[in-house]
Image (cartoon, rainbow, N blue to C red; front, side):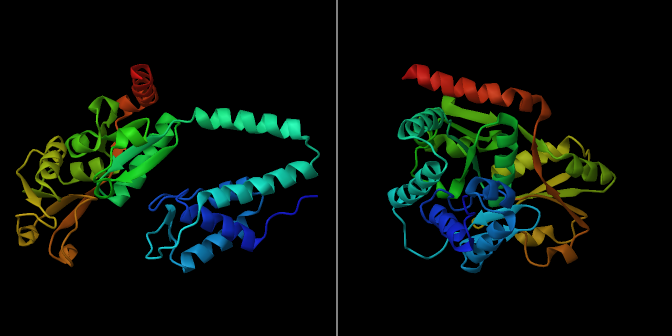
Length: 307
């Protein structure tokens, strides 16, 4: 009988995956249940192994959101070939114990290689970590394709449509990724709208004398004004708050309502100096969601046909 891998083995395998980039920095780990099923262990052992990773600063668990790989100062790396060789040895030993012949194992490997060869590599690009994780989950759920998150700040100098079969990003970031792809035709535009909960709050302040919207860039401010303007008829003031923004954050003081996106960093203690703050969470436009899978496949097919 096969013995379920213990804590040390599960920890080593997860650590190997983190160090080799199998789980890239910023990516979300699968659930404990999913990892337990994959590794032949149990959820409790996986949870304890993840606890070790968290204690060493390799990962960070966010309540109700999941566990994410952290950037560390450790320069140590692991040769991915060594990791794969060890895991392959484990699989072959298990196959032998179960009575598989060499021919049967070869057939299984060939079928697995065929499946892996047909997998699509899709990137989703966003400007901040919170929206990136959220949009990644939305696209993955709607398209049925595994999605790799890419933060705009980490993408400088890369050519994303050479790394991935397709690149997805919100419409308001198309200009930001123009220099990160060779062909904008390889980009799947994501039509994002404010979440229903945010819209309900916007409607709830429709009688306020004014609203201030906050974003870290001028283009972001304009997009936020356009979004809020669909639900609020009064005066909307835009304030750009970011590392290099020209606007004075003191303009936010005394505002009856602040509407902010996740990319904006508000001044400390601002909650005590304004009436209320409404954060905007983005969702895929429902009319677009049903067509996303075919849009992704269309982009990939066009690329394959082009050579």
